[in-house]
Length: 510
Image 1 (cartoon, rainbow, N blue to C red):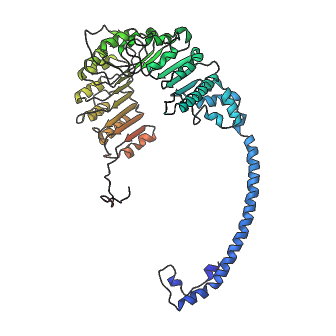
Image 2: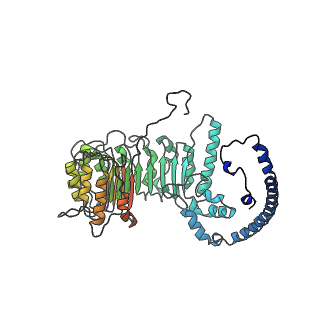
Image 3: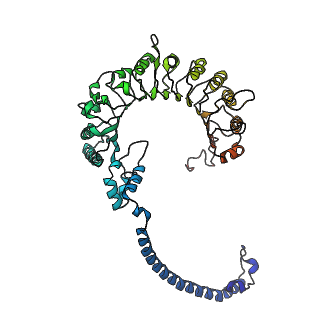
């Protein structure tokens, strides 16, 4: 108020770069005497009021602490039944892997919240049934390594000791035999075991028999010994309930492993050493009639083809990238798969003209994934037209297509006059690493499936382009997105060349 009632003969110069004359300087100083005095009075009043506010804030903080502490007693989490809290704790565990020895995630983290939760977590045996063990790598200081191994062994034994009598899931990374020895008292409860280690580390398990592992269901081995060397250490693999086996870096003398092949429902061969003829693969599969999920590889074909192999229950088949040429053709020719629903062809398909014929045999196929392949337009059209009406998910990975082959394929999937709709039940289309598909062609496909079909089934479209955006199509398909269609489009950002006014100078900023 005081400032608003004041007038100044220098008002027109305020806020400018005007420099007062020698005669004007005393006038300005005289003009500021009363306002400066009033300003000091206001500062003193504000300080007094601030002291009063600080006292009130201190009283409020004490009262708030009293109220909050008592409200905490009424927190709903405190009144949850013990069994409900235990179920919540179990739901906090990772589902795609075993738990790690870290305080940054459950179950260890749950014991760091409060003493009550710590007591609950330590006595909830189900929290401690899964563990991933990392064997410390030997450092230069071996005494330090021994201390680290001893500490981690203690944690492992304590962890498993808390698991009660529940079945165990364990994965081990590294090659220290001490950790395998620590498992010996618990092998009767092993249900899932994964060895991310070298064959030389298996010796502590050499005396385990099939009778010692009555609960063991799945076994995963990163690397097997070559041929039959050291396979006497695998007697435990004949466990009476083993139904899943995964191995990496194997050769197909693996068929001689002491597994109950006839009862396997899951078989995954993740990699190979040496030559793996498709004939050996088929021979192995002929001894696995119960398979439901299978991942295979073969390096080549030799000799006469095997007799046909029928896998009555197999619903998911993945043919790894190592397969190619005649090996792939023989596998597809000789396998009879009446229940096949999901097929992944990561292999290089050289015999493209026969692929449509294979697709007509799998009348229940719902998901198809095709890896890095160069298909002609006619091959694409033939494949899509031969897909069964049950097809729901189509995934094209690293597709290298000449010209407009991929656009033609999408045109076939869109409604056409006088032609039955291809894949009428299609719900999901995923294409990755493509530069051949235009934004306009993708828009025509989505619009066609969502508008021209009386009951559209399309639910998800995901495309990862190896180019920058041509036309933004999201505004055109926004009504479909609002209606529930999930669309994910990823483009490469335009490359920007570095430009700096210091370029070429040694003292420029980095």
